[in-house]
Length: 169
Ligand SMILES: [Zn+2]
Figure 1 (cartoon, rainbow, N blue to C red):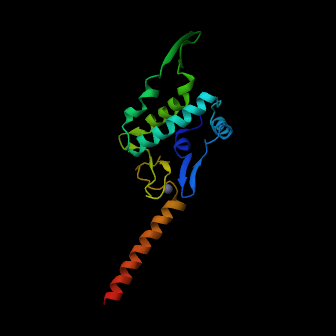
Figure 2: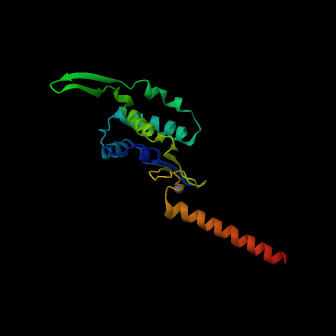
Figure 3: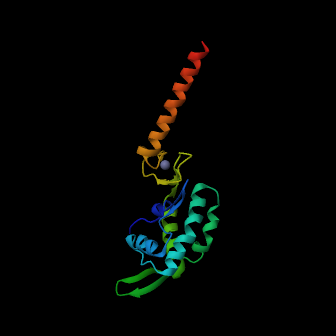
């Protein structure tokens, strides 16, 4: 199944000139969901918009994981007896299906090395990243953008330090 969680929490970024939201209008939200294997009904669109800020807050550590209870509480599986034996099927209300899928992904990213989904370390960046590296130590959502910006900041701080010391002499 196409991953949905990371794209979902990255789908709304507030820029100085206002928010850029990939789910802002229904047609865009439907297309966005369809690209990720969801039909994109009215209920699913509403659910995607509802669960997004809750997941973002939980991943940022601003809310406890309990905030996800409205979705976790409706996670059910139903057994069916088939020729091949028991088959388990998700039995989740339509209005919670997108959230449940995202939360299943989120849960799979929590482990002994901490969460593998987290905010970008750049204080000016609102993106999240998923780290599949062994050390789980990735800091930037994009090395090109945020990694280079951090490098430039360090360089600037160093040159200012040097300059300051030089002028004091
Ligand atoms: Zn970033």
